[in-house]
Amino acid sequence: MKRLILILGDQLDLKGTALRNFDLNNDEVIMIESMQEAQYVWTHKAKIALFLSAMRHFAKSLKDLNYPLTYIQSSPLPIVAALKEKIVKEQIKHLICIEPGEWRLKQQIEELSRELSITLEMREDDHFYCTHQEFVKWVDGKKELRLEYFCRLMRKTHHILIDAEGNPEGGQWNFDQDNRKPYSKKGPGIIDEPVLFEPDSITQEVITFVNATYSEHPGLLDDFRWPVTRTQALEALDYFVEYRLRNFGVFQDAMWTDTPFGWHSILSSSLNLKLLNPREVIGAVLLAWKKYDLDLSTVEGFIRQILGWREFVRGMYYLDMPQMAQDNYYDHQRPLPKWYWTGQTNMACMQDAIGQTLKYGYAHHIQRLMVTGNFALLAEILPSAVCDWYLAIYVDAIEWVELPNTAGMALFANGGRFTSKPYIASGAYIKRMSNYCGSCKYKPEVRFGESACPVTTLYWNFLIKHREQFEASPRTRLMTANLKRISDEDQNSIQKHSQYVLSHLDEL
Ligand SMILES: Cc1cc2nc3c(=O)[nH]c(=O)nc-3n(C[C@H](O)[C@H](O)[C@H](O)COP(=O)(O)OP(=O)(O)OC[C@H]3O[C@@H](n4cnc5c(N)ncnc54)[C@H](O)[C@@H]3O)c2cc1C
Ligand code: SF4
Image (cartoon, rainbow, N blue to C red):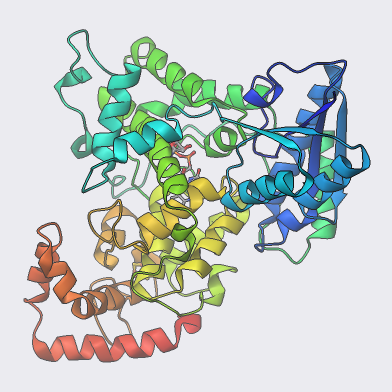
């Protein structure tokens, strides 16, 4: 009996679990380009182009290997409706797929199998170290869910950066204090550029199609140079570990105008599309550590992102969905300022972070967390509007990784389920970590009045408003202690100016 194997746009691995035990004489693969996937959030052109190009390259590899394949191009139907048509038409009784990275799609496929009374084999995605069962076991009985302890467990379980005696390499688990420095006041100096890939004929065709079909969508395609095949992704990985990993850790949090990638790996889209497996990324980093005599701090800092954060947020997503998408701890309701889609604001930090996002579909972690995310929290924006923006605008955005980072980490929308405090900062932090403030209309140290930095005004306003919450926790008490140094009169002025700022967000 024929089995149908569905491969989604973020499951592009020939060795993935979907194609295991494939019967070339009997089974068939189906891949579906649904136009609705590009439209349910107002998706950046580069994200659409990346998915379409990578899918078409993958389809070509399947054909070259003689896999029977139905490839549906530009379907107006949702994925599951197009899938249903095929199943009904050919009376298929057995559907195989890998668990989707989006709750919505997972539910829809399960519903479809019930509706059509077919066998559904939803296989585990083996592009992660931690299974759902292992994560649930780790969570069980814990009062606090913290990345640090999860990361230690992952390292011990998989013997990564663990010495012969079972202790962490270098005698400590975490090298955060050696990492996260700003660039020198003179600037970042010479940074080895990441490897970029000229669009081939398939990508060029996709770019033409996306520009014509989604012309109103945000973002540009002029600088589209993302890896779209496994070969390119492997090349990007090799290049990163050889030239750029050495300074990853120390400048992980640094920001500078016109420095869109810093020393970051730019590997998230390849990892999330499954062009790369995290095991080979970590393997390459461990080899490079010895080969190029790299600092342990940079190696640990990088591995923590992949073995720690990436696995942790995925575990949290499947644990807390569908609630996670609805959480709104502070009951924030304001609409997203329009300039999130254009970058046209006087705030230099936002201009730079959003400007490069529109250009490449990329911003690094601190820009996402402490610039656009921090502002969205302080400006009391409706979490679902912020999450839709992040899902739409970054080439690496798939809900399992985007939502926990945005709702959980940046917006504290789940009330600190896995973070010990809201990640908020004033303009002083942005000034310390970047050169943005030097060219800004606003002044980071001014708390109210015409030249006041909106980030600073809203930061103090947030602390005044949530003083009790911040005072209740030892992790945040110091922040309200600083508030005590501001006179009552100035606190009133901050609150008054905040009201003005909050009611004129589009004009900042
Ligand atoms: C509000 C917000 C939204 C985010 N949305 C996404 C998203 O949609 N997709 C996504 O892949 N990452 C997301 N991140 C995490 C992180 O910002 C990106 O993974 C990173 O910027 C990608 O760039 P890079 O490959 O150069 O990463 P590097 O800085 O080089 O890090 C190496 C790798 O570690 C992993 N990683 C690092 N931080 C995280 C994290 N917090 N969670 C999960 N994986 C991590 C990524 O796979 C990344 O490629 C988000 C972070 C925030 C604060
Ligand atoms: S002054 Fe404020 S708004 Fe301007 S760049 Fe600095 S932090 Fe951003």
